[in-house]
Image (tube, rainbow, N blue to C red; front, side):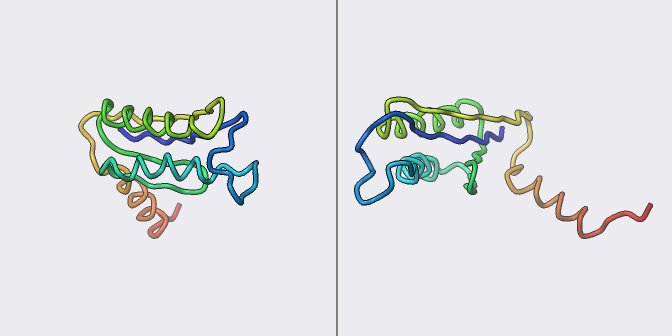
Length: 110
């Protein structure tokens, strides 16, 4: 499965705000991404989401731990999650993009 998720704290906490803006969540996001990267599962982070690939239990465990880490930065946590569950397929984190790029490089003439 592929799971794209975004997790952010809300509420008040002083953890991670030293020398930074109180409305910034980059320290909390960094804590989550560090957990994802340490998992060893294929992953990709962009400006909006982190996408992780693996089986259901592995992926959900990593997302849970990342969400818990972000919880230290506020009194509430917001989690947005989108999943593509396709049993028997692996390598889709890059495979989907590679197939898209092939089509864009060789458009069919109508």
